[in-house]
Length: 628
Image (cartoon, rainbow, N blue to C red; front, side, top):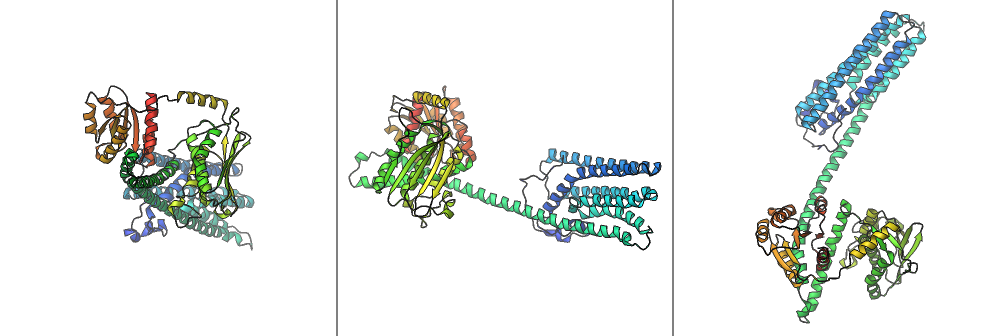
């Protein structure tokens, strides 16, 4: 099988150098693109495309040649027929051997080298040799067809002559599409064929009629001109495709560099912010003076706002990378809406708005169960309601439900400023806020609806927007009803998840992190929760702790990266070697690279992104304690 050009082959634009000095056959074969910066790539691409068509083209030509021989089987002498079929066998065998040799060469090259270096002079020489082989094939096929007048025309009628000329013209014109990549190969085939037919027609005596004498030269000129036009068109198409591919690669490289920079910057920002958040959580507000408490609250609000921004950005990157996968279960829709009411009713009242969450159809005796990821679905409606409250200066926000077949449609409707039709697609893009061109932080980040769109797409939930300027907006999300099997599984989970013990007292925790501030702040927080705590800032420090008989942690909280000292994999290896039991593991990471997040998810351990909140850590530890 012909090896096609690898789609991810690196296109490197090289200076033309000595390409402008190509003369003779090299310049004739390249017909003007030898000085192009992508000349090697163009040469490789047209070689691959041409060789891909050689086999089918030869098979079609053999079939036509056999048909022509059969047309004259009753009128031509036996020696002429034997000569014709002998020529056909000779040419076909040559073609088969060369094509077979080419495929074997390509397969061998792919096995030994993988992707060929198209800039390698040996590779260019190989292309040149196969070009010569194709010239040879074109010539022997051309001379075979040139033998037709000599073998068959002496005993042929005028109708047979012109019928055969028509067949030859059609047969010769068809390869001009693919052989247009190499006009010299096409001309090498065409010239002997039409030369022989033209000489025979020129010597025919048809009285005052002369058109037949110019027919073969006219066809030759037309087909050569068409072949050259096709060459220019196909080369131009190749150049555009290669330049587009190169531009995409440059954009991808720039985007990857930006992603690496943002990931590194995000990681470095999250480390001190994590320590600051933990220190703030460890402070007992009751011990502060009245003048210190407002500062303490403002500090907490600032940390919370920064955490919110980083978490929103992380949500977007995780959803785009496909590392956030929904965990479907049967959920009482009334419970979701009740939680939303508890969260947003004070915010709406503070702004003077009326928040109505209509649950009339969700009766307690026959609760409506929907199948969804509860955390993702709750985030969807939190963002929608927060967005509605933010952009509604007066009036009300209504959350209503209605059944449509096997789905429950939840509408979040407001009496706010509305969204013009021309902007309704844009509001689902990142950082788009139609009413906040100045990017005032207190008006939000412009990520809420973008995250809603992604969360709906991940769960395959239909999302609709109906709105007019100054007439309010209505966002509708359709949730599938849960099946009986889903409801039974949910009931079992609910029963198993009841936690009678709501304390972390006595929990043994080992913290591994290479940042001293995080170790200090996290250990202070855990001690305030009455946990027994050990800390390690490196693999060697971890191994020293594990040698202590008293260090038998129930839970290990480990950073993903320990600087130059290793990664989580080394931490787990040390735990397996130093402990006689398998502790629960919580992974902390400030890493935002999707591929690394996928790797961490394979461990099956809780994954907490820095800066993590104390409440989030508390709930995770509580869940792990109840499991052990």
